[in-house]
Length: 161
Length: 406
Image 1 (cartoon, chains in turn yellow, purple):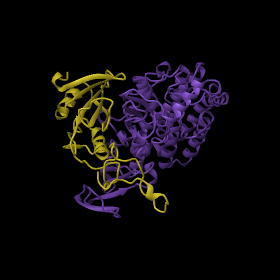
Image 2 (spheres, each protein chain N blue to C red):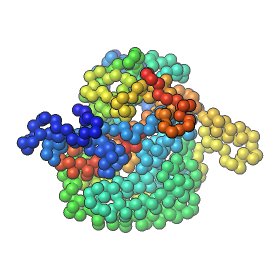
Image 3 (cartoon, rainbow over the protein chains, first blue to last red):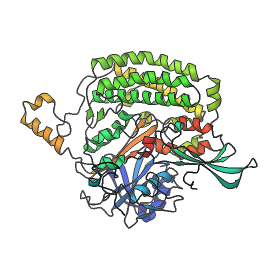
Image 4 (spheres, helix red, strand yellow):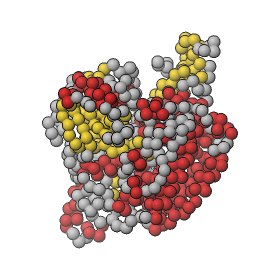
């Protein structure tokens, strides 16, 4: 059983069970949950709560780990909140191998730095890309298109983000 | 490990087992057998593979970012486009997730039509896989046979939704349109003819000595590895684990249909081929049952706040006009919260994780794509095989690069 001291909060959202753990103890919590039978990390991602007024958020970035127990078919969502520039959290790729690429993707698109990740490089965007596109302060826009008369009106990627 | 620009072969300086040196070779991204644009950096010892590093992102189109800029009902159109071989199944994951957040449930007829479209899509996706994989392994005629039936399925898509590929047919609250009598007729003919066509494919490949020698024992993935690496779909069932979301975590009334979960204990490329062939037969069975028991009734939830009123009502009811106007200007808002819904696509678990902040646009939409996770198992499968076997392994992993990169 995962120790109660690791769980900061728990609840149900639209039928899905979730718990919140502190960012410092995320590795302990994930290892405990794996020992509890949640052996599959379905996905790992991040949510940017910048200017989200739906409720009070402890921090800007919410890491979301969706776990599944293949025997009992239970699912559990683990949340963890991080702030900072850049935000840091421990990697869980050695506990759950599928997290390897998911963490790279989250680093690429949100700029979350996963400590101790073996190869934390961009995965979807080009290596020389500036900024992290899925952050809410990153504009939706296009790249400049050559020979287009409208390209000057287009929103381009910021010089630095 | 980085490859200099414009150089395709580099000496690593490492000593190989055959007295030579390990070479780093660039495979793709524009190789015809990479099913899109997948680049692999392969370390070769002679012709044997020692390391594989997939490089992805060439088809990244920012689909998750686009979803945040679209209203809830507009997002459906984008979900068609990441896994471009199974649009209705992606629609279904998104629609189910939005419905869970809204707390509504699609009526029985909509569920049956969703199952019909999902299974047709599974068939057409497996047909593309079978055709192209056969082509890569030297069975040139497979592509023509498979695309013949796939075209019949696309004709049905066109009949029911007006589009051949990107149907946007399944949407939050129900489906876009009711099945026409001609569609049901086409489906009836199809379910009678398809088993014979699958026999044709099997006659060409199952006992074909060239196909067998290129797939049996190639790309082994043990059941433990499949579980640990999070593989899903035919990849995990080809390793003998009967995990199918339609059975294990049913949605849209799949629990009411009788079908078997196809598995194979071969754990290799041939096993994955057998699983997909069996799945095609089971899909036809499900289609037959769905067609025979298609319930009558509405195809959409009766909620004017999330779906537009019927055209006739607009002429007589002021309220209908207001609802129509509100829906097409502001859209509807979804209660705050988050939800994860997974459905079984032709490739495995395609899920949709949605976070709503209570506004008329999603805060975050994450697509959990089966191809992205399955591709991580590639190195495990390809290790110590010949470089030519890589073609069979990529083929039977059946990744769609649009789905990997999103």
